[in-house]
Amino acid sequence: MLNLNEKNMDVEGLGREAVNDKELFRELKKGVRSKDNTIRQNSFKAMQIIAEEDPDFLYSEWDYFQEMLQSPNNYHKYIAIYILASLTRVDKDNKFEEAFDEYYGILAGDKAMTASHVALNSSVIVHNKPKLRSRIVDILMSIDDIHQGKQKELIKAYAIEALGKIYPEAEDKELIENYVKSQRDSKSPKTRNMAKCFLERY
Image 1 (cartoon, rainbow, N blue to C red):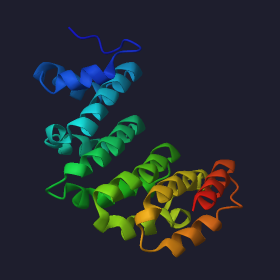
Image 2: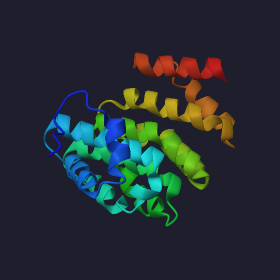
Image 3: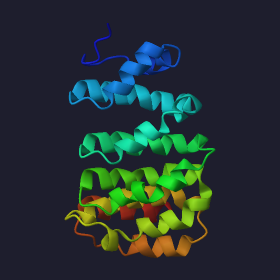
């Protein structure tokens, strides 16, 4: 019996093994919803390896992870945010487009932990789904209007980090630049620093 609550597990090996081991995969699938932090983290990291290396294999579980976006548990949401972003690479049925409002609804919520990671993963989604680029860029530059929590300034740092990766392919470069320039005086040191790094780079 696999003991997923061990620290320092070989999660990469676990993920690769699970693709050919139904029982192990079932354990990891159950583990991502565990209340135990170590089990959940080990399971998530192994699943993320599968999502990155063999996304076609994991794509059939899309609905399972999409359900986790609705979880009252923010750690479950966090896992779904990352896995679904990785799976957009093989999203032949355009499931992400259907889940778009649900996914970005987290950015419009009041929890900084999950909202910031939706912002951060936006660059992955844009890379995999270029047709959504301008829509996502608009959302990232509208944190002030859409996020309901108290840490808007901090979340903008993650938005700028994502915009930095989107920028080379973006049509609306000037719009993005102007937005980043407007964040040079942010109350958040992290956001000010991100804006500075972006502007020095581009």
